[in-house]
Length: 190
Image (cartoon, rainbow, N blue to C red; front, top):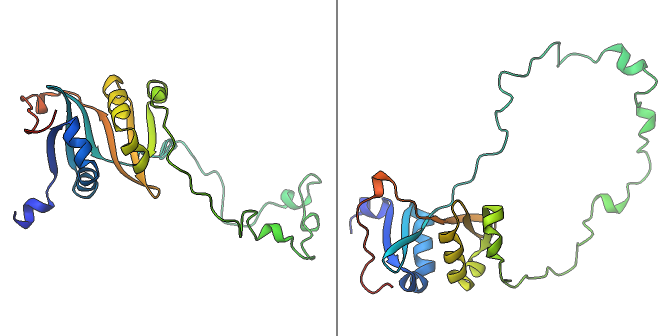
């Protein structure tokens, strides 16, 4: 395989049984190179595995053109700020004594971190929440349930994370004009 092919997007179609066998390998390829894996349930495409994309921050840029600066925001504060009786002064903030240790030390400092074992994720809530995040171990432990829930959900997605980093997303496969050609899973998948 030449280097340009290795760096390109990765596209694959296979049955659920073969996906279960190669799950971690395929997730790694998608997370690294992009592309998609279409997972079949029998003869019908059920779900699509794609690279995780961080959703945009809600409200980011939503005030553009709506905020107006009316005065000098870098100059000195108005005199009223210092002379108004309801405004706190420096005397209200006496920090001359020793600081409490709790300001600097986490209450959990020195305690061993508890490792959370993979719990069963309640995928039945996917129809209500539309987006679930799971760890790799939770994903592989409940692969059948997650695929079934996503394939039945109209707009639900499951994101798979590893150490706080999003790897892949599993979403319902949607037939569009660009991907409407007949898809056939590779031999050996179910």
